[in-house]
Image (cartoon, rainbow, N blue to C red; front, side, top):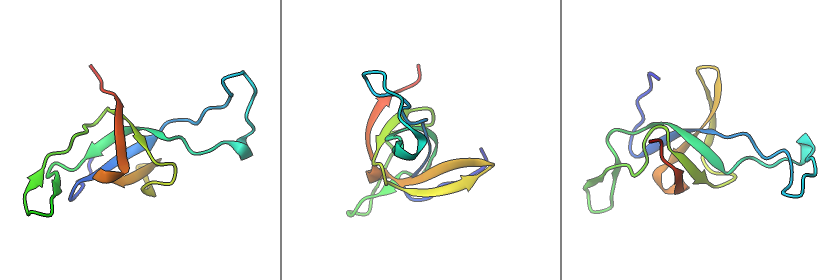
Length: 99
């Protein structure tokens, strides 16, 4: 992907929301919430600037599956895809890292 992210930004693709409850009940489209899981597409190579003036490398990398807030980030359309642009502090956890 030809995009350069700045200052600790993370570009991710939300994973498809759950369509069934754990009990197997089908959830209608109007009741589905945005997925809180996303796959990282790109990260800022510069890392993010800390308050003390030093740069800290990104803890996530492209391909990671991460946990984000339901309303986190800015929804963008890039290259025909719906993506979410996040700051480093909107990523709560790394759920899975590719091997």
